[in-house]
Length: 141
Image (cartoon, rainbow, N blue to C red; front, side, top):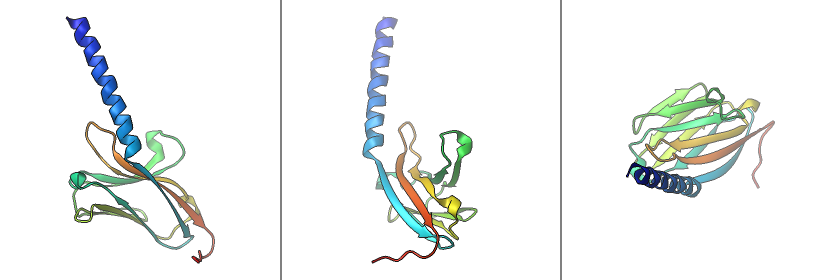
């Protein structure tokens, strides 16, 4: 009986992991933003209504997935503002929108970022963001 339970447990785990991977692919979006050095930018990430009470985060990736390579700002309470350095994060639960404001853009701000909603027992709901910092002003036509 324990062999059968072990096989069923592994089958359920594989199914759960497969569903989790599908969830992650369906709920990951990508955004590209360009700003000029010294300017301020705002990044907004929407999330489903069901996650308005979850904690949220905005992280910059530095190249690898080592824990020390992430620089994050977190919100743990709805409708609160969190700050870390030049990044301010606000969770607007009525609009289901997480907004990250980066002030005084610098060349080292270029790169990959993640907006995310922390979801227990499932992959987080995330938005991938690529920020490019240019020298001089950006003119939109």
